[in-house]
Length: 369
Picture: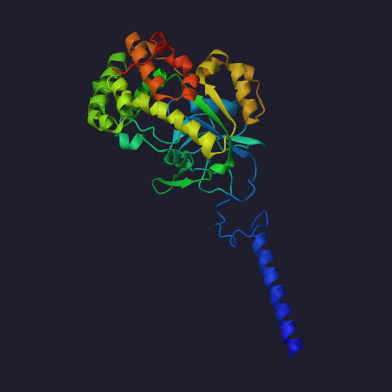
């Protein structure tokens, strides 16, 4: 009886050990994630296969797609994006809602996605993200975002499936897979006009001739659009904004666009420094790439741990094709807008944006009117 009991117990232990071994084999690093209460799709506790993720963060229309394309051409390696519905084809053209999204890492089926389906770099893969609070001509409840919402949207992906008339779905990845961040900074005055120009392109695709005629692609058309958006959300923004900020900026052209721009860069700084444990960051000023391309692109490649397969010298600042629009503003408008941004920004952000808000320094202090 005792011998039979001992034999049965021994067999049971062997079976249990075998099951545990098989369960660990199912996991590439031999951790019993199921027993730890972790879904196998959540690889927070697992080793990242292949290169590590690094961000190329940018406010929309800052030039991140141009920069990521140049990096891809110089290195000959894949880059990534959170937005799998906008990809690059083999001929180098941007396509929207044409090709199915392919994950950067095969074990991460919810994104991020390859910008172009070629071989990955060995160490780091740059991934484009625009995060949150960037909607155009929208109610303040949609662009005044908290830090945790901003971070959540930084890791939100769009997957595109081209079959059955096409469909999109959202997914997320863990911010812990991101080890560095480059932050694209375009002159805010240029960025806001570029937002208007992009909106015109969108309206053109939709065939809205009335809108296009009302707001031509001229300084006058831009200012009329700014004026109308200011009027449309006047009451809502007056109620939502800090009173001092409102008094300083309520009558500047496109006030919500400049508000969104400053808020976005502040949030990007906050999450990378505090929520992501102060990961290494690098500011990528588009004007530096335009004026001294080889020096600043080489620094960016070094920051990302990427190797040039094609000499950086074969490219130049003209490849960073981002027009300037400072002449679309009057001198008085530029000073008032610069003072608004300087007042809204923290000291850290004011220093980062100093080249673009220096006209405010002509006044002793930005005063509230």
